[in-house]
Amino acid sequence: MRTVLRIERHTRLPVWPAWQGLVLTALSQLGGPFRGAADQLEYKYGGRVCPIPLSQSQSDPFVLLVHHRHAFRRFDFLRPLFSRLILPEGFPAHPHRGFETITYVLPGRGGLLHRDSFGCKMRYGDGAVQWMTAGDGMLHEEMWDVESADEFELYQLWLNLPAKHKRRRPNVQLLVDGAADEAPRAIKTNVVERAGAMNVERGRIAHSTFKAGAVVERLLADGRADADSACGAKTWSPVTIAHIEIRAKGVSHALRIPTGWNALVYVRRGAVDIGAQGDGAATAAHAATAASFDSQRSAHEADGGAAVRVGTYETAYLSRSGETLMLTSAAEGVCDVLVLAGEPINEPLVSQGTMVMNSQAEVEEAVRMLALPLASLQETQLLAGSLILQCAVTDL
Image 1 (cartoon, rainbow, N blue to C red):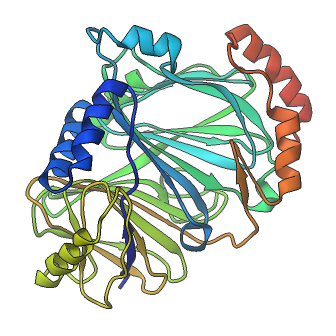
Image 2 (image 1 turned 180 degrees about the vertical axis):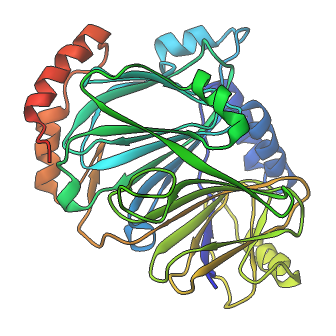
């Protein structure tokens, strides 16, 4: 049985809309019930982003997890000023090399418009995943699709590549919800307008329900690393990525994770007991942990065996021993968690800016080749850039 080693709550930063995020941040600083109220308001109205840097010792092969919750409302009178003078509504063109970006737009939320230096242009959202293997190097931009929606929420995950795959040709996988009743909406929402020279593969997220609908599991990657993966993305090292909703208090759900893999759980809504099926010990353990929070970030060591409660917007890092991860909902309403698990790559890692390589020299080479002036690229410039990148890319 997997146990919790420590719990962290990372700082949530105000943006989109920043003024709203500042109000939530001020409320969070008051602590106690005010922080819980700020969390509920963020879920409902947006305005914050939470970057979670992941340690190689406990999270390899995962490098970074970012939770975005934003809103772009038409009657926000500060929005035009903010987007023109401070921060555009998205992520203008920038380079990557040596890893994969996994962008999972949560069901029911607006998504992104993608363009890249291989000439690919696509729109995705509402439960879809863009799994982009940067490999040898590419430029891309992801801008919020504000013409299609007002409310946005997604996870972006950086996944390291083994050294033998870091210089492979870039490609993109577009995954949509595999539930039969979601298919028509998924086809309409997620469109590849132009593939260009990019290899775009399509796949399905495995969507399963258990216990008469009390548990919903969406599997973005199924734990294997081969072209015959039963569901989710094709990966270059074995990983499991699961979005799990438990819709009734006290209901449990188990995941199998091979012994020796790193694993972590991030709680988006509600609270979850990890370990033995929920009991009073979990409440006591979480109460002791909560008392130690003197800032937005803290950690604790769990005592052996007893279930440990993990609350909203907290990240739990798990032991490597045991093949079962037991999750039990500990709150009324929906308990919503993201589970990341992977076989460690166990190679040197240097992450700098938007590059993830094995040495500082490799990072510097990537920066020289790919860090171009990108502030105001237009689509024609992206297409021209694709010719340059394609000459540098080795098709392995």
